[in-house]
Amino acid sequence: MMFFGSGKGAVAYPLVLALMLTATAAGLFVSNITNKNNILDPQIMGFLWPDPKPLTPFELTSTENKNFSLESLKGRWTLLFFGYTFCPDVCPTALTTLTSVLQRLRLEKADDDVQIVFVSVDPARDTIEQIQKYVGYFDQSFIGATAPLEQLETLTRQLGVLHERYAPDEFGNYVVDHTASVMLIDPSARLVGIFSAPLAADDLALRFRSMRGFLEKQK
Image 1: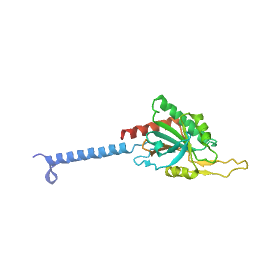
Image 2: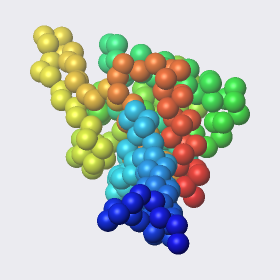
Image 3: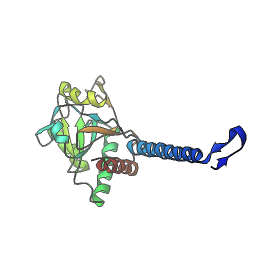
Image 4: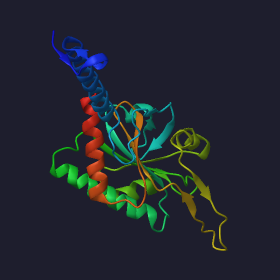
């Protein structure tokens, strides 16, 4: 029988071989776990994985004068932004960015299952007609929606969207502070990504494609 070493420290060759094989197998096992974890937890900024948040029922009115509900999110990828039409800067900037993202997806013929939704958190001033004109300025395919504040809260609370109306000035004008992030909802109506401001079209489009590609492979 062959040995490695000498004297009391000598180890039988078959035992050494068995230990080596065990160590190798263990290494492969650890490697597989690591690779699996990398697959299950990709490093994409803003990606809420592996624990996406399933949304619960809500009901808004859309610019098509139809109910916009949980069912309206299913079967499509939704880029969701909250704001108001009197917003001086953040909202038009975000919607301009989303227009650019949609244009990129159209060039790639990857927009068929994508919808962009603007939800007004200022229902006191933003009528459905006004929202429709507003979102149509950016892209005719954009969907606008709103509801009385109590109904809005059903959606904004579960998404962590904050909004606060300030006191009007002497002319009756006021501003509404609100969350400036874009929310990504998957076709199963789960919150799977949050794109925080400042938003850049190239970066947002790249991260969206990465998230969508990863999740589609999980089916």
